Amino acid sequence: MNAYLTGLAISASLIIAIGAQNAFVLTQGMRRRYYLAIPLVCSLSDALLILTGVLGVGEVLSSRPLLTIIGTMGGTVFLFLYGINRFRSFQNPVPPQERNDGPQSLRSALLLTLAVTWLNPHVYLDTLILLGGVSSRYSGRDRLLFGSGAATLSFLWFFSLSLGGRLLSPLFENPRFGKALDLIMALIMWNLAVSLGSELIGGF
Image (cartoon, rainbow, N blue to C red):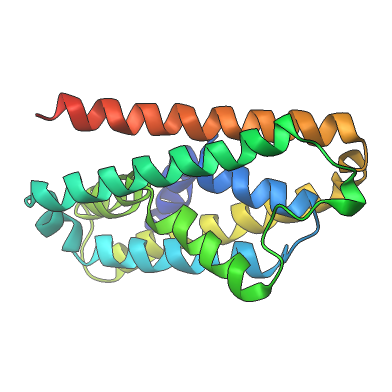
């Protein structure tokens, strides 16, 4: 049980922060768009990555810098372009009932969720490398319990974030709030893109 609670606590310290994935889940929840499907995809993705890290795959990947470079480049480009999309919405606001700037079908919503999740190198750092590394202090059943605790936190966090955003959805009916949200999203995405780009340049 101690290993399970430790996994829960360490996962919380890593996941509860402003990032591309959290911002996306929150805003889609506020827009009442697939507010159950989106956090489910994020949670399952995290659980898969955590399990992979606990099994020791993260140690193998960390020894291959080329994979890290490719992943960081892809994540940087994606976040920059997504930031441009949100900034355009900020510059050209439309009434909430006429907005058509988000995923309109379940398929497009899931694909965008997968992109926000799997193209972010920080996700791999947190789940594969950091959580995987901490799990190495345990063995056998305790190691699996640690991973289970970390995965449980992901489910609790993403669903709370999405459903909490849904409760705040009335605020989104205010055009000024929607416009401010677009600007905040753009700035978050660009800040993360610059951060990733700086890490990439610093690695050479």
